[in-house]
Length: 290
Image (cartoon, rainbow, N blue to C red; front, side, top):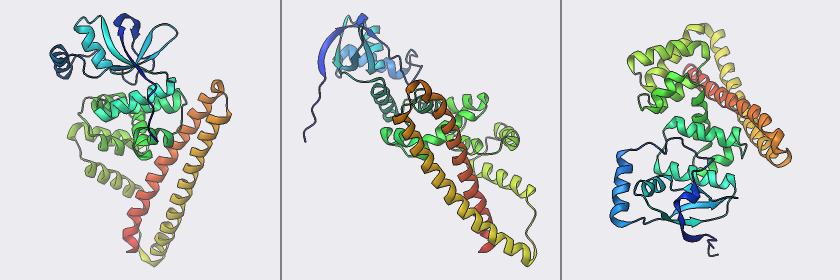
């Protein structure tokens, strides 16, 4: 079946176009070398790709092409070529998010905040739905949102590319009481993912008694069996939470939806963290039974 594009392409006066009220980023006003290159290209060749806008009650709103719009504004364009299309707030946000993800224009914290707004603030869908929309895994989306639990100092380092995202994810999945000690070491020594995992393993070993004698060995086997069942039970719970979130989107009024979804998403993140802990605990004990 051939795709029908209902969009209309026209030249619209610049003053009639507004930035998106649901912008996934807050940095469109920053000027970068990439923006200077775009301005030079448009000055020489003109705007080769129209910006995507949608009609409002008064004027129009940018959906995709904020940088192109700002470049045309800097060149004092009065009119700009636009592709006009009717769409909902949710669809407009999804298009913006997908475009920025494809261009890799956002840092990990910007992604995390954009994902949180979609799932929690706006209540447009669960992690599963968002992951499908942007072509990423559920784990990717959950881990990004989980980064927002880190201290502001670490989030600033992530945004400035001074802390590896994989290391940050490891730090976000540890108990709060142990977090400060590892964070302090990471800040001083720029630890790798492997080093952070070794420190976390060491902390667990300090708290856990050593396994000695046949009785303790048999006990370790039982622990492995229980942790495997625990992981499976938690994954089942995760699937049920996703179904519940999707059900709420269909049955609960928007005014009451946000608080409930916020609670369920917090619960989902805790369950995801519990699964990670269970898998790590199971793996650390598997060496005993080999």
